[in-house]
Length: 97
Image (tube, rainbow, N blue to C red; front, side):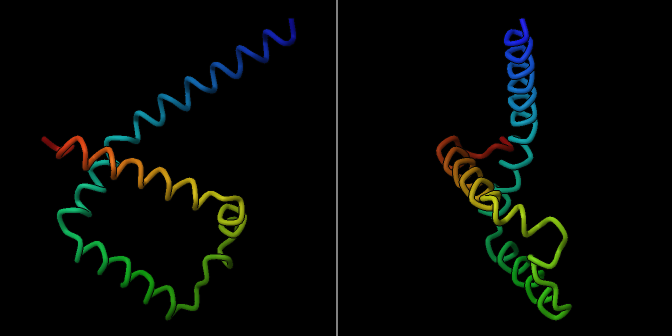
C-alpha cells in the first residue's frame, strides 16, 4: 500500500509540473518573440545589466544560492528550454497572433 501512495504522489507532482510548464509557455514564447523582433534592445539590455553588475563588483557566484543552481546544471536546463521554445516559436509563427 505504501508503494501505491508514493506512486500517487509522483503522479500528482508530474501533473503539477505539466500545469506549471503550460502556464509559463505563453509568457516565455512572447518574451522570445520580442527578442526576435528587437534584437538590439535585447543585446543592449543584457550588456547594460552586465556592465552594471561588473561596476558593482557583483559576481553570480557571490549571490547566495546562485552558485549552487549554476553548479547543478540549472543554467543548462534553462538554456535548453529557451532554445526549444525559440525553435517552436520560429516553426509555429508569431505567438501573439
